Image 1 (cartoon, rainbow, N blue to C red):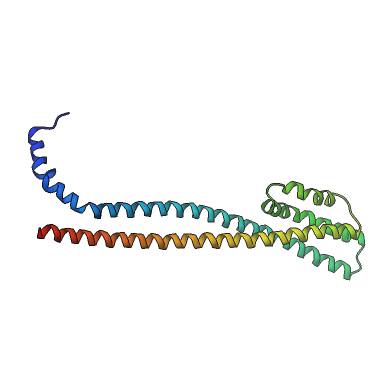
Image 2 (image 1 turned 90 degrees about the vertical axis):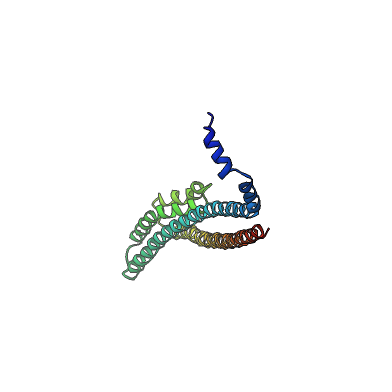
Length: 208
């Protein structure tokens, strides 16, 4: 499609002419600086978005683990309190073991979720022995001690995992803050260079 001759003549006279070309040539350093600064800002924004997604995942895992750990600890405290009451009232041993089992079965769901976070690859295997024991009608101290040892290990690993997640969260937050500061610095420097070059080239062109 050919443009009308009058329009072509108008463009050559007022739009694309030697003066326009020279102006673009003179301003090219400032334009390139602006493009470069914008490109780097976009790159930083993309990286920050990735880090924010990672931080959200870490925060979600940490929040879930804290919630499951609180529920698990609550069951253990309730079990201990009730067993103390039974012991002080000379309750039957069989009733004590039944109560012990009841609370351990109640805590099992939270314990299962904790282990699935601390050991996602083989959590079912790690829970296997515990679930087999709690499925039986145990009535001896050795079994209770074994179950307690397993629960203590889960609590310790949950604490370690929470500490690691918090450290990872802090590290990601630090990286995001550094990138945000770096973006601000690049933008400011880019703007100063662009303004300076524009003013310098304007006066250079005016005085030539």
